[in-house]
Amino acid sequence: MELLDIVEHEKNEMMPESYKNRSVEEMEERVRDIKEKFGSRLYIPGHHYQKDEVIQFSDVTGDSLQLAQAAAENKDAEYIVFCGVHFMAETADMLTSEHQKVLLPDMRAGCSMADMADINQTDRAWDKLQALFGDTILPLTYVNSTAAIKAFVGKNGGATVTSSNAKKMLEWAFTQKERILFLPDQHLGRNTAYDIGIPLEEMAIWNPLSNELEYEGNVEDVKVILWKGHCSVHENFTVKNIENIRKTKPDMNIIVHPECSREVVSLSDYAGSTKYIIETIEAAESGTQWAIGTEMNLVNRIIQQHPDKNIVSLNPFMCPCLTMNRIDLPHLVWTLEGLERGELSNQIVVTEEITKDAVLALERMLAYV
Ligand code: 13P
Ligand code: SF4
Image (cartoon, rainbow, N blue to C red; front, side):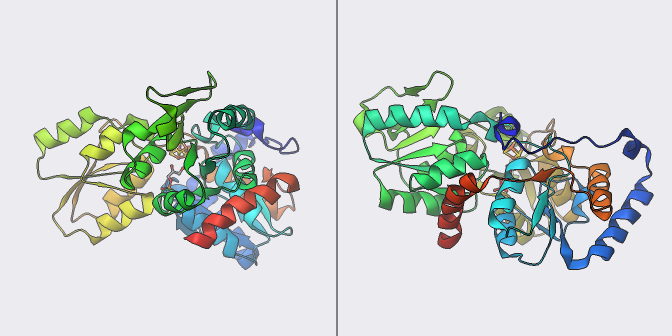
């Protein structure tokens, strides 16, 4: 599990109950005060899937790629209070300097997809895949993975990818090796490989639980090995949801994130990263209709920002990402008030050993996109 996979000295500190009884107005005032007091010494990145009550205070908002780039570029901030999930805060810690401290307002803000690949499973898989295919495989990992997985990938010549650059990175990877092991999201891996022309028959699945390759043909034909992980939010968009929209609202455009299944992506009109979805809706004409298949905090924000367009969630019963939602206004205030007292609660510290190799994977990506 991701949160247990991390360095031992990370402590999971819990917010005192009293924070839940404070008024929203008072907490918002405290955030404004503390931000003003710290000025550029404090930096708050916020992922697009964060709640409005948090994102309103972020100094930069973005998708995973934009936030990784922002962390790498920021050389001034002493404290980075990361409003996103654990793997994003780890990435920020690895891309910033020694004197910069990264804090995650709630250590329970993990990612179920990142939890689906741990380093022991990966080492076991690698041994077996090397025995099967020899030195023909390059590992790529979605940034939604632990620092330890990124280090494994970096050490073996591979790179990280995000949903904004997966296509470019996969094309690059094929200039390096004949085959790719894609961790941990089978859907992003499959959708991207399909986009660059790899037939589905040349994709196998690696099952980390049985430690076996799932493939029916001749293994010599395998080009992409997809780790059997997925996003528990995006898997809730189904073919049935698409059929319902097509039947009831035939003029509606359907746009989804590539963490959705191949079937859902192939039946949609558009698919792309969080940033792509935001920009596509922004560029769309007034009066157009959209069904969006991605996280609900973002979909609600897009709906509010575009009253001139008819926008709905592709799945009408969709919920926000529960782990992203762990970061709320009380946790943000608690973290900032701790800083004010000179206390670092929930600091994310990736060991030097892991950072050294993981940064190789991250920098290969950042240099390439
Ligand atoms: P992007 O920010 O790359 O679109 O990824 C979405 C996501 O699921 C983040 O956890
Ligand atoms: Fe992880 Fe999916 Fe939540 Fe993103 S939306 S943090 S991939 S569970």
